[in-house]
Picture 1 (cartoon, rainbow, N blue to C red):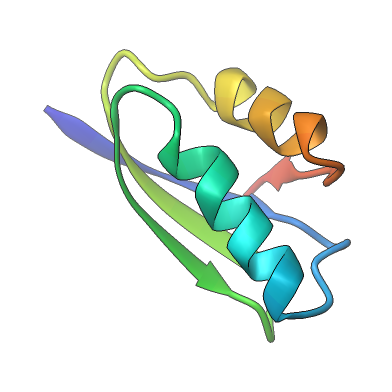
Picture 2: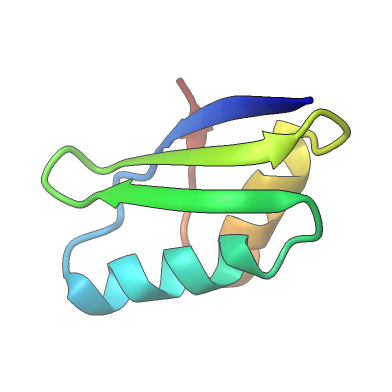
Amino acid sequence: MTQALQFHVPDMTCGHCKASVEKALQGVDGVHSVAVDLANKQVQVQVDDHVKADLLLAQLDDVGFAGQTV
């Protein structure tokens, strides 16, 4: 089973930021897809059920972005 997790990442301001967020989240085991909406500073991630939001938020933090679940 998969689930969709959504995050607000207010620090994303450019294409480089978008690419960094995508790369960081796509590197997590169990992540199927990452869709970044730069204009609204939203990220939607399709993941296996065992993947927790806290893990993805930690990945964002590791690359310099603070995120919040939506």
